[in-house]
Amino acid sequence: MSSYIFDRIHASALAHDAHYLADQNKRWLARKDEADLDLMVNAVVDVLALGAKTFAISIKNGGEIYFCFSGIATPEQLPANLEEVEPTPGLFACAVCCAELKALGTASQAKDILEQQYYGQAGYNGHELREIAPLFPKLYFVRVGAGGCLPYFNKLERVAGAYITAGYPGHPLEFDSNLQLRLLALFESGADTIPFSLPLQGLLSYSWPSLFLDLYRCLEQLYTALKLKSLVGEISHKGSLADLAYLLEDKLSWRPKEQDALASILVLSSDDTRSKILSAFKFNVDELDEYSPSKCARSIYKLRNSHVHFRPAMKAESRSSDQWNEIMIAMCDAVDDVYEELGVEFLKDRTGSTSTV
Figure 1 (tube, rainbow, N blue to C red):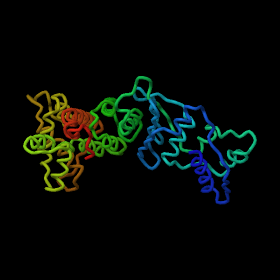
Figure 2 (cartoon, one colour):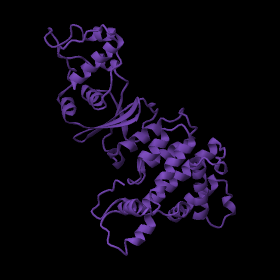
Figure 3 (cartoon, rainbow, N blue to C red):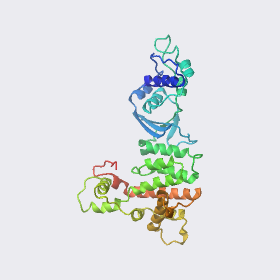
């Protein structure tokens, strides 16, 4: 890892100055302690690229779980059970090497830090992290606090979503505090079967329709669930319903009508959720005797079509940020409700493993 780090510093210096001469002297990061060295050698590292210069990293070693973020606004208040930590040589090396980060230092900076400081020079015991860290993109590290190992910490998309949501104010979309809290709850405590890469993708977008469509796609994944649940009572099928859905569409080109399928799964959502949906689409819910899944589906599907198709009759209506906030909160509620009812049954087969469909 140390070789990679110092090779990147030389490469950056050469990119800034074609006359820079990179030497082959051996250098390394000075150790903090044995525990940090063990982390550097044995940690399990997962990298999630969120953009060209934006990423999240999980670093797990023994019972310790750390996360690293770069290119993302730092929240004033971190999500629950996360606490800021100072970078260590082990954490820094894991992040730089596993994310394959490029150095940013100039030739003069490299010379100041590297010349006459290498193995063989009197008193050399490695470079201190405070000298090397400024030559790379800024990294922010947190760890899971004692007693705070919640299930969502095992899925990097969820942690990244919670972290971004917590620091969202000031980003492109005008989230109000209610939507911010609702998205935070979705990432932190939503059903484990929710495809969190979709709301995370929407969160990183620059438009309300993109966020809406990614939440819509979460619901769309379950459109076949109820029909297939009935079907497997009549046929022999050992895999998950998701596997069967894939086979039927791949081999027979069968899929349900979308609006009808959406209505069928919204039956499983709560009255409160359907009330929020109708209210967000400007129905006067005080005058309704029931919160019809069909009306909810019709409104959601019409909005979906207006942002998917580009036909004159499908022209999207202009909506205020206030209405978008209401729609997103209602969509989060719908995703939570439906995955709580159908997620496990749809995505997990009889052995308990999770489908990748």
